[in-house]
Amino acid sequence: MRKILVTGALGQIGSELTLELRKIYGTDNVIASSRRKKEEQKEVIESGPFEIVEVTNAKQMAEVVQKHKVNTIIHLAALLSAVGEQKPQQAWDINMNGLYNVLEVAREENCSVFTPSSIAAFGPSTPKDKTPQDTIQRPGTMYGVTKVAGEVLCDYYFKKFGVDTRGVRFPGLISYATLPGGGTTDYAVHIYYDAIKQGKYTSFIDKGTYMDMMYMPDALNSIVTLMEANPDKLIHRNAFNISAMSFEPEDIAAEIKKHIPEFEMDYDVDPVRQSIAESWPNSLDDSAAREEWGWDPKYDLASMTTDMLEKLKVKLNK
Ligand code: AKB
Image (tube, rainbow, N blue to C red; front, top):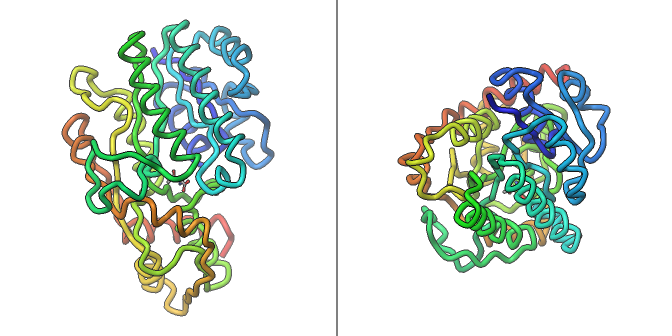
């Protein structure tokens, strides 16, 4: 039976993943953790075990793993791309030292580890369209540097110590439950909130900038499916390209207009996030994930937009 510790459990992915894992593996078998409690995440904190864990504190993490007899760590705590450019030293500290502590405790306590990489692990010299699984990785952001280093470190812990490490390169993730914090792809979440609240949105990403994206239910499913996949079939353990759709701001605006005809969008491009977006792929080739563990996303831009707008209207009382 899995006993799972989720780090970053109150963040955009963690808050939904924790509740989903509790449904699958049982409430008491999923320990949510975060560096601090957040009032708005009461459900995650109160629906099962919760621990304060600062991922840079190795001792604290080891104590929690031992206390709950954890055998699987889903390590989500990280700073994202845009905030990582504002605080590069802190991004290195949290993303790299946090992952190192997770891998060390996993080695000592015999745990499996899932940790996400990102499209940010690619850079301007990477082929932009249908970006291959194995290709040039020279990212231009601190977040991207920590993601490439993390992929390689996870490979090392598997080969050297036999730690069962697994991971995917997530694209931008879109969800209605918890807002993302400090990413470049966040515009594709904010646009839905503003469309419902104000009927208009000012995009900080420019027209014509394509990035890979995914709806949260597919992202959650990718984590569970990869963790349960037959290890004999996994060639690329730690950094599977996965994607569900690729679009630019005009595409998502056009899709929203089908539901809210008066919706309007204009642009006030943020040069930092725009240059990050331009350094990332337009679209990933995710055939390795499809072949090695059956990756098969369910949502495209149209079905995601229908669901997002429906759920957000309820959430925002509109
Ligand atoms: C970000 O924009 O930083 C993240 C990511 C693509 O990893 N959403």
